[in-house]
Amino acid sequence: MAIAQLIPSLEPRLRELFDQHNERAANIDWAYSDYVPLDEFQRDPQSIPRLSPTILSAIELAVFTEVNLPWFTTALHAIFKGSWSVLLDFVHTWTSEEDAHSVLLETYLFVGRNGDPRARAALRKQVIRTGLMSADLLYDPLQALVYTSIQERATQIYYLNVAQAAEKEDPHLARLLRRLAKDETLHYTFYRDAVKLHLEADPNCVYPVADVLLKFEMPGRGSPGYQERADLVRLANIYGPEQFYSQVIDVVLKYWRVAELHPTYAEAREAQQQIVKQHTRLGKIAAQLAARRERQAQQEASQD
Ligand SMILES: [Fe+2]
Ligand SMILES: [Fe+2]
Image 1 (tube, rainbow, N blue to C red):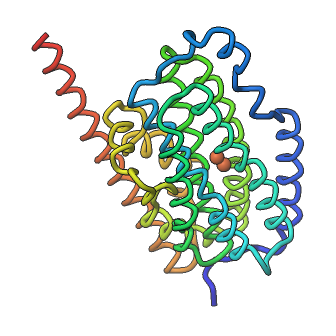
Image 2 (image 1 turned 180 degrees about the horizontal axis):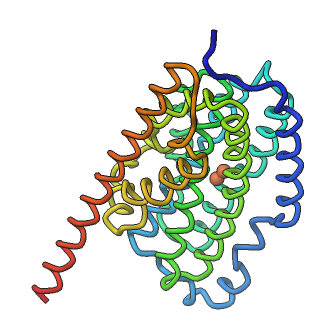
């Protein structure tokens, strides 16, 4: 007997969430040409910002994550197949929206002559040929909803934080990244609320959260040059374990009120304890990293 799985009575509620998603997405519909200031760049090529190595790395990291889309779609489709049609419908819509992300990012880098487009094209092929499957860890639809909630929240925060860091050197890029973050917000909202409905209907649905949380990896992990790029982004305090804790995990777990649930199965209660423990552990790591970062900043300031 499965401890936690999709609850059939919730299917119409998910259909409502999907309808809401479509309405919101239609209100903010966009095309990549809206966010690439081609005329301005052509008129005055000198005005094209040169991106710093950190921001370029942050964008390329996002590109090599987003281009793996065919395999994310494959994994989610396989997991949702045979469950509810609304989940498959969402995956189709979601894929069409995600597809625009790598197109916009790559076009922006290409038009602005940032980075090496040939190297990027080769890496793009390599990523797709390899077919990274962090979603391989997933085995059932409810677990996949938990995973995608965390992953969409992570990409939303990633884009928002990179936008903030890029604002000064390239306001066009910051605007574009905030645009992508809006899409990720809508994706996050769908998945997050689908899980929330399950937890409210049956607290034993907390069971798969533990597994996902303990094994979670960013979807781009393993792409070529991932570690170097991720290190630059982390060292610039844009995105790393600190943000993963305070802006992603802490927010998602509190929204789901995981600590206050009352599961009836022993396995689900045990999973809940594991989650609370991991939440605390990630919080401690984040606090240690923040303290270290502050000490280093103070040292550097006193050396000046
Ligand atoms: Fe995306
Ligand atoms: Fe997304």
